Length: 472
Ligand SMILES: Cc1ncc(C[n+]2csc(CCOP(=O)(O)OP(=O)(O)O)c2C)c(N)n1
Ligand SMILES: [Mg+2]
Image (tube, rainbow, N blue to C red):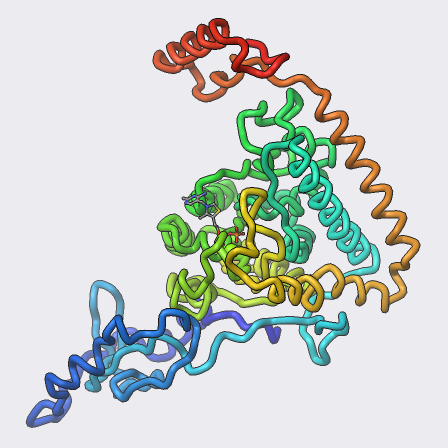
């Protein structure tokens, strides 16, 4: 496959065997040590003065100074034997460069006009699958639009759209097996939609009514479904990554033909849990597919203030994880990369990392106004020229699999179904207050019982402070 995966462990072990495992160190025949550098060079070249470093060019490739290693050159095939492993040696004092001379390329299949780039290497998608993928992307768009409006009307308290990231949502879901266990961040409801979570179920969660599986105890968009192997969204960023390593390891122990799949944003990679999750999965050889949606922003924090590496893909290799960078706005590329990653994770029992490059077209959430920190032109460019749904639609239409008539039918029936779902969800009663305290622990703890009694007393004393129909 032309898809670029970072060096695999198999390859390394074959190389190791070929090189021989027991080479011993032979002293170099030097009478005096190689001249190194002066104090001046030390301060000016080796250690960069933070005040002169480029704050906003985290991913720029810079010319490397002489002291930085340019290639994999080693003096010879001799190895040093450490508890940390056998390594070749070099008498040159060279630092590993902070970036490679070329940025990791981005795998894509469809160009901006929805045409397949010649010689593209991808897994074919049948008419049936392609149409379903397009339908689900369009459904996700309608769902986002209507729930967003419902929040603006004050009918739900909060919402967060996936606008601009529909291809990552749907194409990754299409590439997985239903047994694969998904641990989402929060901008991936399309995965759950693909698995059969109904528009009514989405509405019940957003309205926090009695039919919501979370019993109304979570903010809107914190979906979860046991039936669909989809962990409930958790607000604290990145907690799902170490959990995914554990889920993957459990699947491995149970010899299941499935993997854990977890999503994270670019901002989430700054959390310690990101690193713990990757490292655990690598060391335990757990079948986990890590999908990072690099959409350029973490609320108002631009990626240039998030990290200095060449994005996230290189972090996979640092942890010994096979990795790929993919155009997240290209549904065919996402589908091929996730399917291949999933196969490798399950058949080879290893984690794989995917960095999907994309853009968050919507505001971060209904609590945000992104025009305060980014240009309207930038948003417009991504909305129009780099739109993942339009791109995939062009390809499906060019194949003769989709028409304008299909389009208007789908959009109007989805809109109707959603409006009905919202009206019904709004009418459902809420869970009684006591449910707030149930299911927290297997057996209710003493302090929880005390809190329950206290809250009941408060509601009885000041009923005017609680909504009508609110009952204990
Ligand atoms: C541990 C933690 N810190 C901070 C927050 C507040 N917060 C919510 S979303 C978010 C930004 C996340 O950005 P990113 O991971 O890039 O995801 P995106 O919203 O771009 O999809 C932050 C800082 C949080 N929920 N949890
Ligand atoms: Mg982001």
